[in-house]
Length: 318
Ligand code: MTE
Image (cartoon, rainbow, N blue to C red):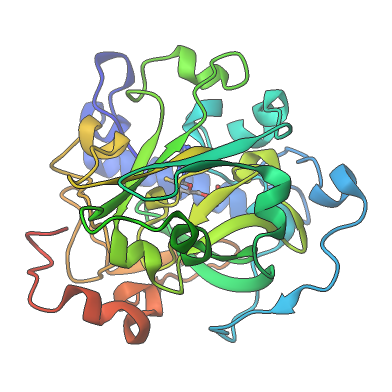
């Protein structure tokens, strides 16, 4: 996620492209060398989720939609993150997210619905049977992971709110608190982070209200204590540490769309045939692997979601 601000111009724009590519290759090689030598690539030691609670989630259901791929190691899932509220570097969230207080926490469900209400975190934890869902996560930047999330379909929560017929979209808002989220003191994005889905996307059984990963509560850097995960869309659609879910008639203005509308559209379905304006989306680097692999249409979830977009031009609705 690159932002065009005078103080933060992408190196590709100030360095000749070839040099920039070389530098990136050098950094990648250095990382691989460190990995081969058994050293920590990032040098950070994330707080372990297990260390936070010591017990994990008992009686987890094995989830639907198995993909038959190995999960990315816990260390990488929790130390290579995008969470701009804690800094723009990949290691920043693991280093800085200790200031986030995931309890007490509640999520307000409001807007165009018959039964708006505020849900306490403990109520959310008991609302439906938690299951382990192993999903691919494809970041718009060209890397991917496989993550064993813990949660249940967001539809479970949505249906209890009884959305009105006017409710065409669902908006998700992250906590706004610069004391807990020091990155919000910088005007990197128009805070708070906002994302959105069409209501049928939000109701799709793949869309997960996510309360944990690797069998335990969410580490702060992964969006504690509750986030959304939408596996067929680029990772930025999956808002972290949410405090509000709002049903709207109009398409929500999302944080990334407000920042760079030409690059980050509302839909952002993973699509190897539609390039990002500044790079190809045809391939991806799975964290921990050397060779890039082809990116799958809808991130491999076409069977479940392609019908949501029948008749829509993916170049127009990117
Ligand atoms: N949510 C908030 N509030 N702030 C963010 O910066 N980054 C997004 C998404 N959700 C982001 C966010 C991006 S770009 C990605 S790729 C995923 O979170 C990364 O999730 P992970 O760090 O748990 O893998």
